[in-house]
Amino acid sequence: MEMPDIDDENLRKIYEQYWLHARHQETQRLWFTNIYAVIIAGAFAYLGYVENCTIKVSLLTFLTILSLFGYLMTHSWNIPFVIFSRLAEEIAICEWNLPEKYRRFTKYKKGYEFYKGIGFGKISMRISAARVFMAFYSLMIGIFAALTFQTIYNLDSHQTILIVVILFVTFYLYYLYWEQKIINKIQSDFESRIEKCRQRNVTESEEIG
Image (cartoon, rainbow, N blue to C red; front, side):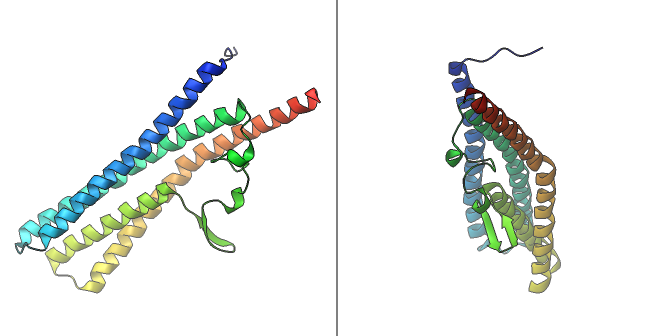
C-alpha cells in the first residue's frame, strides 16, 4: 500500500522540524560542554589550594565520572543529529531538487572529495565536530583518571602519561568503532536514498525532454 503524497506546505513543516531537532542536539552538546568547562576550571582552581589527599582523590574521581558522562551524552546527541539532518537534506534534494553546490551531507555535492579532511595524500582522516567532541572527552577521561591514580599510588610522570595515552586511545577508538557501526550506516543509507532520487530525477528529465 502506497503512502499518499504530502503537499509542499506540510513538507516544509516536516523539513523545519527535522532541522530544529538536529540543531537542538548541537545546542545541548555545546551547552553541556560550556558547563563542563566551567566546572573543570573551578575544580582545578580548588585543587591548587587543597593538600588533603582524600579530598583530591574524591574531586578527581568526580571529574573522571563527569568526563565519562560527557562522553556518553555527547555520543547520544551525535546520533539523532545525523538522523534528523540527513532526513532534512533528503527532503530538500528529493522533493525540491536542491542543487549540488548547496548540499552539505551527501557525496554528490560539489567538492565532496575536499570536504572535512585532514592529512597528506592518501594518508588522511575525515574530521567532524562529533569526532572533535568525542576526542576531547576521551582525553579528559584519560587525564583525570591518570591524575587520580597518580594521587593514590604516587606514580611518576611517565606512568601517568602512559595511562592518559592508553585511556584516550581506548575510548576514542571505541567511539570510532560505534561510529562505523551506527553513524556510518545511517550515512550510507542516506546516500543510497539520494542516489535513487538522483536516478529518478534524471529519468524524469529525460522523459520530459
